[in-house]
Amino acid sequence: MPIRQWQFPTVQALRETLKAHLFLIDMPTTTPVHVPPMWVQAIGHSKSPWSRAQLQVHKALHPLWVIHQQDQFWLTEQIPLAIVNFE
Image (cartoon, rainbow, N blue to C red; front, side, top):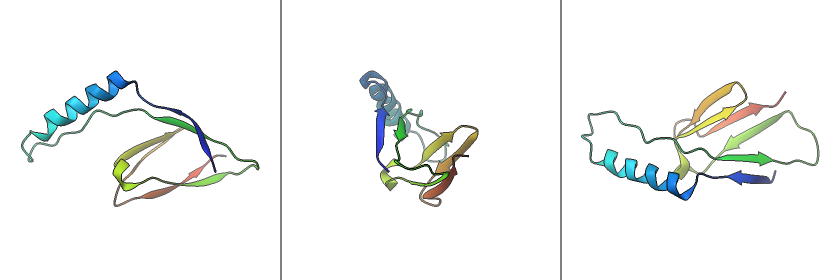
């Protein structure tokens, strides 16, 4: 299914996130740290109706927090794909 209408963070937001990431890289490995999230949104278009989709992204994007309506979950190297219901 083609994915369209991608919405990415602004260049400034991307810069700030990368700066935070560089700062966190220097933290001791015993300290749990998380990079601030970057919001990306896209819309999938299909010629025929469907109620489920398999969602999978390249591992370079892991971890990826997916939010679809009330569902929220992570895609990671350990959990690389998920089935999303659109009912």
